[in-house]
Image (tube, rainbow, N blue to C red; front, side, top):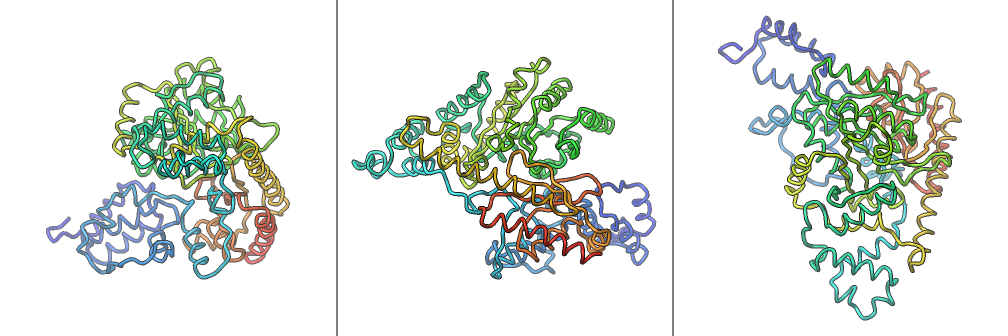
Length: 557
């Protein structure tokens, strides 16, 4: 820079000739060159250009700050003047990894949907796996135990009329919960790894599920699976050259956290024509490419059943992945939060832990598995309950994970209780079992019925194809868009499937997530939708998907 803190055109040209263009908005360099030939650029202008150039990388979702400013769910706040320059904490000085981070599930389309809802429009939210928000009822037994555990003893478990108000097994379980908490109730901290009694319940569940030993000392109870995933990635990523292999399409918590931690995202593409399988050739190619770029591949994530793709991995699929990770010293992160959501009669959920224990060559596989109370048929998203199990993880690393957990004291206690209830529900012969079984079956069969109807309805639309939703809570259709729509979207600075999703929202009130938010192959467009709303809302929506697609294609003929 010159002595007057400005940068001249020659210096800018040297910068343009030497800097890499990856991760920068394509028009940014031309803009900078034009500015430099107009006048010497001040340091402040150059910093502002850097912010603009890298804003959300090359993705066309740069309006997030503007969307937030008018987001009705925020509530009233005191605005700051846009012209003020006294903020030392600003777009230039803040963490640039946070600025570039994206989370499409609650992005621009959802903010627009909330805005329309605030204006009185009827919106069908199929953008997120939040079952109880769209009408799924809670399981009675779980809520009864939580209520008694929360109440002071004299008004709850020790009340003389408690057995006339609650089933006997509910009272018994609530007393056990209170004993595990040491008599302090739900308002006190537990150990940072989670209360030992609840972790024993989780270990028993895993052992019964897989037929192999599980240990409470290797269990961490967490605020949903998300916080456990963040803990593990935080401990894994040590430098900007540390890479995490993630499936494409993927659930965007992985890309968001990797960006936040300044690691490297290494996408391996799932094969849509082969029911979203992960071919060994693809895994090996992406690993070798990363290594050639000097990246140290630390871990690989799988999501089974798939989100957003809905496939259920077979034993053969899992063996390929487990062997690949074991042979290359890669930690396997197994996101298994939808393990209860398997609808295809010829498919079953098999855990990565079970496969690792039963597959030669996987004896030294380093594995972390995740589960949650938010999904399955329990759907208790707001309770923020979940756990992770460590398998073959270095003792020192586990101690550091504990240290990280202890910095947050402990996960929330109601979530810990709900996790214990999820893995240890009423059993045949218990007073609550009949009602529990009825409620679970109704929820599961509804999900299964709507999954089938949705996929069949989408496949009946000319220009839309969709693989079966074998599990999880989503369909992820491939949508053929007119070329004029693609050109229009590009001209207006958005992805084509964002244009499509916004059109769907405005025309029908259905809120979905553009497929670009999950990642997909170049030239593919689509969206992710849940099938969580009840039949009386979901079935008409299937027809609206078809009508909208026809109207959209006519508009851009």
